[in-house]
Image (cartoon, rainbow, N blue to C red; front, side):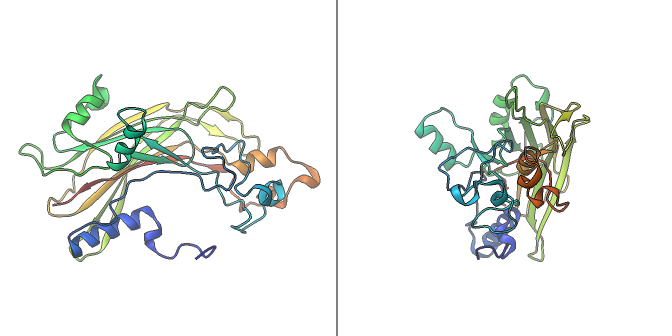
Length: 297
């Protein structure tokens, strides 16, 4: 219901994906086998306008003024809890209409919370553990495994546990608005246990050792962080008789939210009370999510 919050666990990605596993167990088919993208939800006819620094609101005249954009919790007119929106990433074989639609059909897609990050995700029972250091990483990953949006095959003779590969690149940004460096790579696994209960876990693979920080009051940044991260992981708890899904998540270092940029440009009577409300977050850890890879016995 509008403005009533989330009604069930299936309003979240993990809840929907685990519900799909349950349906396959009950009905023989996973009707929630969906890829993941990001997008805007704007009435301004401005797709892709996802900059935190220059967010102009979602509803035209309804939230054009700063005080309206920071008004509170009126979802129909604008609120400080809104975000500019996300971006859809598509790994197509060519930049053409047919190429893009083929990639969408095979779910080789990912979503971001706004930044133009790029992320790859592969899995396979014969995937080399050291592909991150390989000059032909992508060629071997496609040859030895499957990309995001795909199904894993059966365990191989020499490998009973799947290996996963994640590679991510930061948003290059611009000279005046550089993207935040990458901080962490994670894999989210979901499965249904012997009692039919949904289970999920988050596996953290790489935590960058940089010292990048952002001052929420001035939105100035200092320090360094990773422009790219890569990691592989083998699931030690893999059960060949158990349905499961895996997807990757990439986290950037925290950077200023749109309201921090906006409030930094306002003073005096033009500065809404939300600018000084400690409950209103000033920073955001931007991120990307890949489509899952499924295992079905």
